[in-house]
Image (cartoon, rainbow, N blue to C red):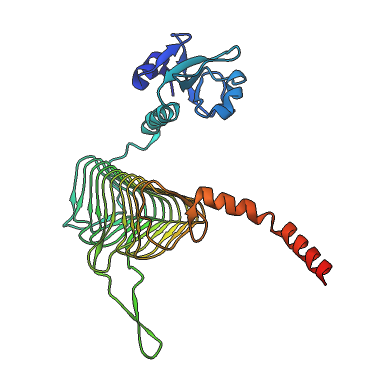
Length: 340
């Protein structure tokens, strides 16, 4: 990897301060950076590291003013974190495979329409209706009947995409994910047994969706489980049948969302959270880790934590009060003894 600093400044639309002839040969975290590396400083908590780093160039905020002498160049931008993400995207494009064509061991249906510059890897089995341009399907992938996959997608090894799933453009589905498996539908019978309810719907992933490793998105009973545009789902997440996840919502690992629930747009759900079935969560809601959402969240932009969830500020007051309980118990016992 080798970049002229002027090229990076132009791409990031930044304001450069330093040696304009500098060459970037690596990318690193600020604490581990070496000469020739570029890194970034976003959180003021780590500002001390910019005075100690060996990096040649650091991406910083437009508002950053050094409090001590620096040995590095600076690129000032509106949002250092986003700019660094853009830079990582450039590196990823350089590093990712450029393969096209179909591996000899892949099995492709005669009815599958394959776009331009598509790659299908070893031992993959494809029954899809259509695969869009510039889509990369890695090894050991299964794609079922009537599946439609858009342009510029990346399907990683071991992914299972079941019948009738629809995937938009620029989606990433990471290793081991299962899209479109049966929803958990069983009708209780009078004898205590359960009769399976056939799941004949599908899953729709809109554009720019990312599904993490070993996550599962169940197909709907009749209609569609829908993951809206820009949603980012972490590893080991379960989204049950008939759910809808709103645009640009992010969901952290080990979260479970029960059937027929609707999560609004621009929500943030922390790790190991649980959302009960048949409820609605308003746009912009922030749900903390290990939280339990058991009823509708009607007000937009609320920050919730706990199980069942309550407002973050209320939760902190309750938690602070709970720490005083042992001492209060002692005081009550002491008063009881005196009364006796």
